[in-house]
Length: 244
Image (tube, rainbow, N blue to C red; front, side, top):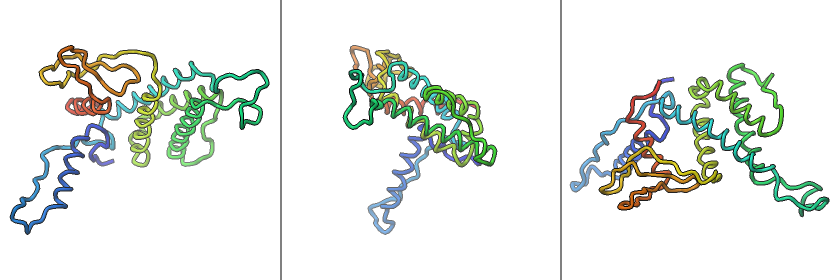
């Protein structure tokens, strides 16, 4: 596959600059003496096939983390809503308890990633015949699917038909599950220096479940949206040598 700009966050700045330039070009009137032709931004995109090495590594890590998040969720839920008295029915149900929202998420996740497994099976073997068997309980099946995708990862994340939608779906699910599951009260020290004015210390922390990264330096107290901090991490990673 010929290399083109990686669709990941490593090119967030490139896409913003390119889009702003294209918008300015569209509004430019060469007959207006008060306007000068917009200058194309001097910024180079990180190439990918279709993802760059750093984004592929990030997506691969997030896929594994999805499996761990699901394991954490299943260890704290029995798959059903709150218990009811013996023999009591929940309104609207035909004699059994209603699945909890977590159970619905497990089912959707399982269907989504098993769909990717089947898609690669069809690409790899050219047929729907002999698609992977489904065995065990829901959590076990999902774990098997994640392991299967990881085993076939190098081919899947490079294939022109599925690499981008697969990677984007993994990133979307990872973000959604991370925001939904407030797994404990862990506080993690972040790797970048605080961008607050006059700070620059390695003092940024993130508490699991929060939507902000915060500086613990008393003289600063900077708060950064988690998504913005992640963009900062991606840009910093893009400046490093690309992983093979």
